[in-house]
Length: 316
Image 1 (cartoon, helix red, strand yellow):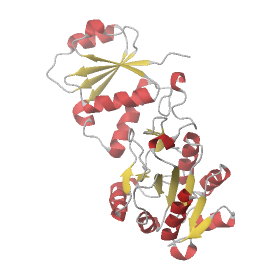
Image 2 (tube, rainbow, N blue to C red; image 1 turned 180 degrees about the vertical axis):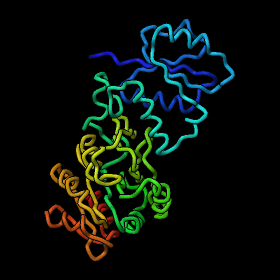
Image 3 (spheres, rainbow, N blue to C red; image 1 turned 90 degrees about the vertical axis):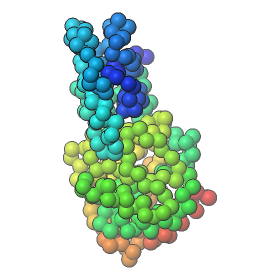
Image 4 (cartoon, rainbow, N blue to C red; image 1 turned 45 degrees about the vertical axis):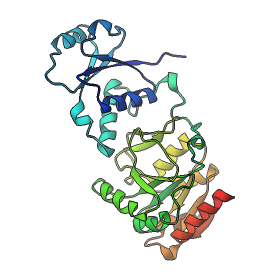
């Protein structure tokens, strides 16, 4: 088995939370990380080709360190820890992808290592994290109102993980997260790299990243498909989740688009359940109607009835 590539992480000042977050993500994507303080020049591994300098104390003199690294012609990435400590959500995802992309310019997505090939494989088993079923909740026009009614029907302790794919522009993400949390039963959180996946939780899929699930039950992010039709893209989310998990399910709510038809087909053909919101309870029923025409919907009803169907499927 090939050895894992090594990245050096040098702390300029106190060790910071963002550095430990970055270390965790590097390790989850197949890298080995060796950490040093700025005065440990003599102890640094001479085989490391890439070093991240995590800058927190700007008063420390690091001239000798920079000279030492330059002499060895290694790649140096400077990270402002005071800024990265404060990043959350989409900005934190973007920062992570930017750093990882610099480490290996040949990768368009999050770097992978042959030494850790199962990180994003279909063998991810979420049952060990208390999650029995994953449901992709797909929605567009009229979706937020339907999703609120749907989520409010749960107790919040069901062994379910929801992934919400709501068509929207990036400026509405924060507002959407707050609005959907008004359901009062299921916590809704914007998907962020490093988050632990928990039962009774709903992850709002970001607009500007695609999500992956690591074998340790945490979220990762990767670059979006540049040819996607919508933001976020239902079809792409279905494809990504089926690459990570053996099976996912899909509930289709109010919406007007063709995005979601291919995704529903993939879910259905891989043995997952597909259910739809009834036409009379939708603002627009274009996506759900196409799925009904294709005879893929196992249940059709208003949002509260859809929630009841999912709860009963757990008992069954």
